[in-house]
Length: 222
View 1: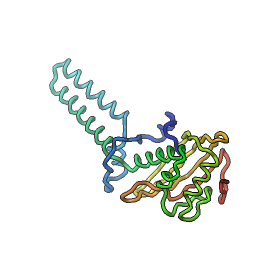
View 2: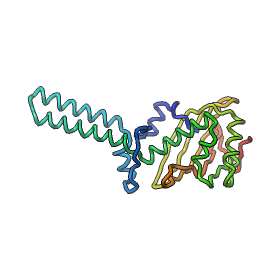
View 3: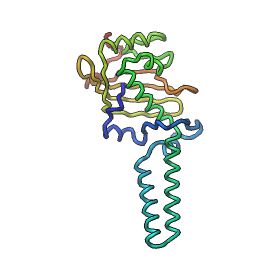
View 4: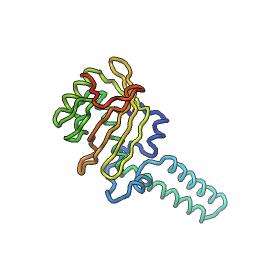
């Protein structure tokens, strides 16, 4: 699973404007288009810093030139930037919630917290590679493999997610530290945004083990 604490700058570039908005408390209304919601309510530090610099510059030169209009422009831009930052930190977008779900899953896997992992799964969750092909057996199968491999944490080498409405798809390339040594895997996860709850994994597919493609029907031993 993802261990975002080890995410490097190259991975942050893949994530784009998404960051962990721990202050977010209000979910973005469902009628707001993803493109607008991403621009208004996700973190955009580069834009914010630029806006504050513009505000400070306008205010400074307004004082130097004794130009009240330029000073008012600086104050207006500064207030708008602060309001934008407040909105982005106070409102959660689907992409931010999805990213935090990955973070929580990473922490749960590292600590062997099977109950927390299962809480992110749909009741009909499927993962052939983990031996999960029917409802009610995910906890047992996942728990057995965590114990067998002794997962200690994972580093994200690649993270890319797309979502449209209540569905999302994530591809992850992970370097996982286990008691048997490091293991490189590539996963594809399908998610549902469950009303009144949060993102839940519907399907997990192991795409590659190392650089080798994983065949259909492959099941990791437990």
